[in-house]
Image 1 (cartoon, rainbow, N blue to C red):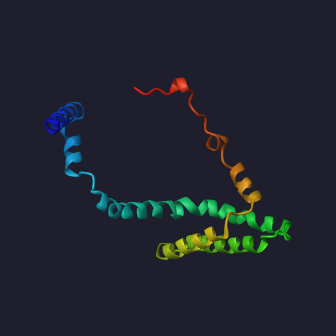
Image 2 (cartoon, rainbow, N blue to C red):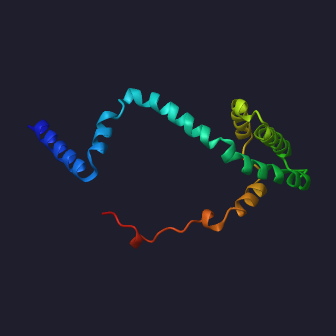
Image 3 (tube, one colour):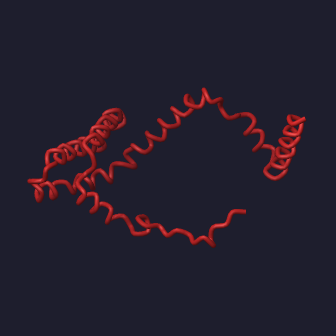
Length: 157
């Protein structure tokens, strides 16, 4: 009886959705059902690879890395006694290599090298706080602290 009731409710929901949004929406939803739990990881890998590829693309990374690279020389010069100076020099070299690849005509062929260099950069830790602070000051105020809507502007119906 419970199965029949559940099936009846699904049919009512389906007909309501079809009436409101059209047959195409339901047809698409039923044609591509959610993958089984065992299939979900296999389906996620290509999606995550695509997302990672876009996030690590020249269009996203080149400009911020160039800016980061431009800030290191002055910082290194004014902080020669910093305890992590060698780490920061290594970071400068890594960033320069990545920028050089982005500036080359063969950068598409060297994507795996970019990933390796970014991993190497991550292993060295964050850039100096002064550089991070300088870069965050260049971000428009609206992006650093976006205004949040007041509770009366948020309504769930």
